[in-house]
View (cartoon, rainbow, N blue to C red):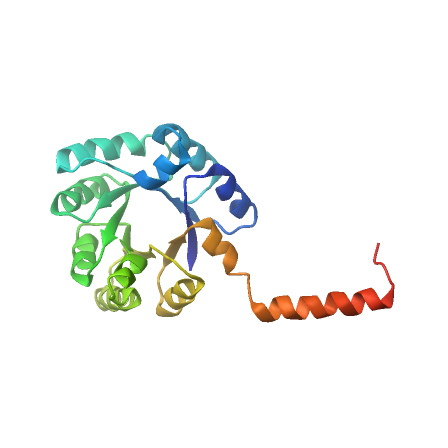
Length: 217
């Protein structure tokens, strides 16, 4: 499974990228606001830092304006993925932009039917939001499974990009289901390394090592 990092913070992306933990980056208007940076400037910096797809989201609501914004964003770098909302206008824009050879990430997906439409419109990625479904007491992981089944049934090339990841269990379950990509905040990716038994074992090793009175260097 590919790891995308969900942030517009350059230092956080760079740290994970140096470890080989970044296959791409996703941003959205809220993350741009949090960064305090100009969208074109920070997106260009991210694209220069990572080799994989970098999702930059349009803010227009009407198809023609989405297409114009998408073309502008795609000029930033070759690895830009234009991020579009899963609305009827978003699907129209997806069809045009994907037809022009641009990568498209259709976001805010909450049903398998929506994912089916995005695939037929030529989306490169579909972004189902797991955590937000869980917030309203629906099973976000069930949606990932349903999309996986439908895409496999008909051979769609659209990649499932599991989004709104809130926990390390979400990451594991998405990998087991067969999501192509997951995007998560840097802190969630880092937590994948944590386990209480690792900490317990390391603590015991350090206590025993201290008793030896030895040094390696």
